[in-house]
Length: 130
Ligand SMILES: [Zn+2]
Ligand SMILES: [Zn+2]
Ligand SMILES: [Zn+2]
Image (cartoon, rainbow, N blue to C red; front, side, top):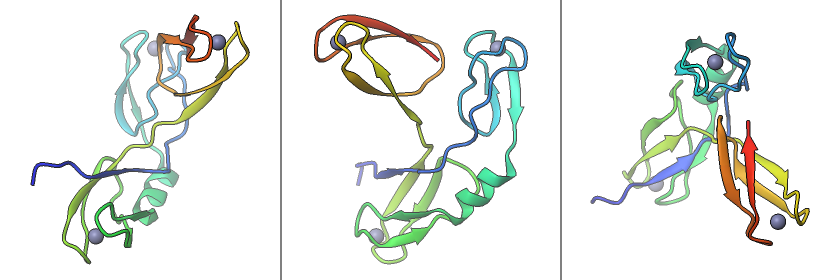
């Protein structure tokens, strides 16, 4: 079996900005690196860890609802019902941005740094930065 099964966590750590340069940091716990100034910052958030332990996910194999029981993401789980193994991936927050050319709402993953995105409606390239 080589197929990778996963579900995305619904709980994301708090959005924080870099203490050095004030740019957005990756929304993870533990040691993260600022994409802008390369500073290493250690992020801990007990509330997120507690919610992660108690988070319920549906098994991608049989849809049984399981409690993750692990205080980190990604987390590897084995389903008690169908024995399949899968990964609970970190949540990637999504944001909505208006295309400045056609005002179409675009949903995208919120990742730190500068990016160019093609608007699917009008083909203009917009630059987004978080
Ligand atoms: Zn920084
Ligand atoms: Zn299952
Ligand atoms: Zn557009």
